[in-house]
Every structure is written in structure tokens, then in C-alpha cells.
Image 1 (cartoon, helix red, strand yellow):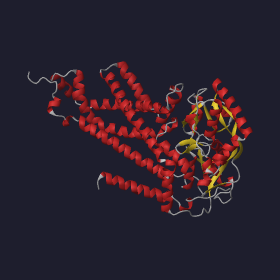
Image 2 (cartoon, one colour):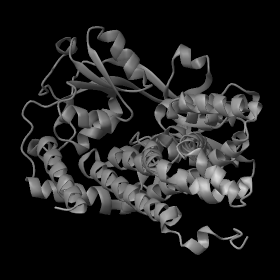
Image 3 (cartoon, rainbow, N blue to C red):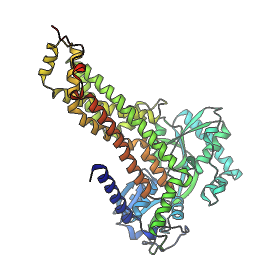
Image 4 (cartoon, rainbow, N blue to C red):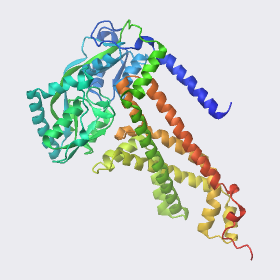
Length: 521
């Protein structure tokens, strides 16, 4: 069996195993969201020492940690990730806001929650920077919010996005707002249904609708920046975003960093659990068909994957090209033995290689370029170009050192200049040594781009998160992302293999090798 067939068979086995282990017939189908005591656990005292899932940076994480000091906590990026962990028995319970749990119950009939609340009286608000501009915007938003609540507009918006009438859920046209008084950058996590999510490939939900109405009423254009929830407050404090529309619960510690508006939502936190006797839903094939339809066809969600692929490829290809040039330039500067250049290059490689990718991205986005308009996409290209440049520098150094020094002397004897000897004789031979490592670095870079969602980049992985936040299913989004990464890696490897064959000295003609050499002396 050849390589491609082995890969296909391996993927088929993987898909089958994931399907059989993760798809419980009792968890498929539709059901009514209803509070009941039919959960596996019916009181908070029963989960004192259980495994509890929470979302990173959420107020529910703090509340659950205080309430259940003996529990084991698992931290997730999104609520759908928590739900999937609960369904697959990775955790025993999940902590989230009451409105998010109820919304998930409408999609997942196997879910319920303990009637005893984890916490109550929570106020979620819009947040603004602690600056003069932030203070002005916060005051404007408070006035707008009071007017919207007094007129019943806010209640109407809430009922639309939490109701079941899809015809009323008209996606607001953020791009159509005139920038009479300027443009506001809004931070949002588009996985927080029904507050902030994606509908028909456009941002929608309570917070998005209210932000649109605020911009329209006050003459602001709104530019949305989608990011993980944990990155919202750093985005505000660093100046990358002007405000986040809502969903951030007030705490005294958070109030030290940002300004809170008047409450936009008042509710509580609950513990979600699986039901004891969830009724059997559709069969395996039917549920698989429904999952495929929800993931790719409904609301044309396949377009999100296409957009994610485009951004992932853009970051990867440009970073490889720029990183290769950067590493090559650094090596040429150090090749002559310049002490200053070698020390600077050594410090650069040490710093880049010693810093986790996520940390490097966030340092560049929130600190180095914090006061600029450089987008997350551009910052990602800068970060991965630095990473690949450091790797390229090391590859060149090790590859050239692997070439026998006699090759340089032979090139000089043939009349080559130092520059021509390096490019025509040494570099092609060195490339044979470092190209396998280069190929591996390309694949590693492609996979490493999966973390750019932390700085508001809509890459392939982030688009998968957005789709899962709407479908509450992991199977097809994750399998699709896996297969796409396999295909992208295979294409890049094929291209590099072609380049390797082209630069291999053994594949060059004698005429090309002796070009410029005096042969009649």
C-alpha cells in the first residue's frame, strides 16, 4: 500500500473511531429547553469534588473555584468546547451564565442545569478604556442605553435574539454605518450566542445589534475585532480596541483596568449537567447527515472555512518568504565574522526561540504595536516571519558548516570570487543538508498559525470555533480542519520538494556549473 492510500485509510479509521466514541444517539435530535431536576446531579453539594468545566477568563470560573475548592477544574476557550467535553464525559459539570446554558439546552436535549444557582445578581456591561476618550464614550453609551431601555428598544432587541422567530433576526449592517464622528474598534468574542455570534457569515446577536444602534444614533462607524474572550480586556487596555459591547461581568479587579457602563444584562450563573434519561434521538446516519448540513450547508458556513483557509495561507506563505529573506540577510551579515552582527543575531535567535508563540503574538499585538493601527493579520505575519527567520538563520549556519571547507578553496582555484563561490558552490551543497529541516519548519509554521485567533485573526482554526459555537458539535468542524491542514501541508511539502530538486547540484548541467569559469588557461 503506497503513502497516499495509507494516509486515506488512517484518516478513515480516525473518523470512524471519533464517531463511535463521540456520538451518543441519546444526545442527538432536538428538544425543548426546560428547567428540571432530572439531571445526573440535582444539587451543588453533589459536585463538590467533581470535574467542572469553565471558560478561561469568565466570572463563572472565579465563582466555581470559590464555591468548589475541592473540585478539579478544566479550562476551555468557548462554551461549546465545554459542552462537548461534558457530552464526552471529560467533565461532570460545566459553569456558565444562565442565558448561555438555556440557549445551549435548546440545541442539545441531553443538557439541563441544577436549579440551585451558582451565583445571582450578576451585572454584565460594556467596557471602555480608562482614558479621556474612553470616559467620553462610556458616558455616551450610558445615555444611549438609558434611552433604549426607557423606550423599550433594548427589551425588543433582547427578545428578538433570544426568541425562536428567525425571520426577525435581521443581521445589522455594521459596514453601512457612516463615520460622521469617527470609527470605533469593537472587541467581541463571536462564540457567545446569543450575545455575539455569526449568522449568515456576518456578526449578529444582542451586543452586535446594540452596538450598531449606538453607532447609528451617535454617528460612529463600527469596526469589529473578533477575538477570544480572555483577550478582550487586554485589547481595551492596550488601546487596540475602543470598547466591547457587553457580556463582561463587573468585578472590582476588572474595574481597576477598564471602565464599565451601566448594566446591559442582569442574570446569574448556573451549573449545567447531563440529564439522567435523555431520550434517544435520531439514528447514527441521520445524525451524521444533520451534523454535516449544520456545519457546512446551513447559512453557507462553508464560506467561513474558505475565508479561514485564505487567511491561514496568507500568513503562512508570506511568513515563509519574509522569514527566509530575513534569516538569509542575517546570515550574510554574520558570515564575514562581524562580532557585533553575530552578537545581535545570536540574541535575536535566543529571544525568539525561547518565547512561546502565543506570548510573542500578544507582546507584539498589545505592546510593541499596541498604539498603532496594525491589524492582527499583519502582526501575525510579522511574528511568524521573525520565528521562521530565526529558524532559517540556524539552518543556514548548520548547512554551510556541513560543507567541506575544501569546496571553498576549490572554488577560489577555479577563479570564483568569494560571493560567487558562496552562491554557486557552497549554498547549493548546504541546501542539500538543511532542506529536510526547512520542510519540517514549513509544516510546523503552518500548524503554529492555529493560535492567531488570540489576536483577532480569523484563521482556519478560529473559523472552526465560530462554527462549533453555532452547532454545538465537534465532529465535522474538527475533522474538516484536520483534513484541510493535511492537504495544505501536503501542497507545501510538494512545492518545497520541487524547489529542492531544482537547486540540487547533481541535477545541474556541466555548462551551468562551469558558467563564468575560465577553462582555456
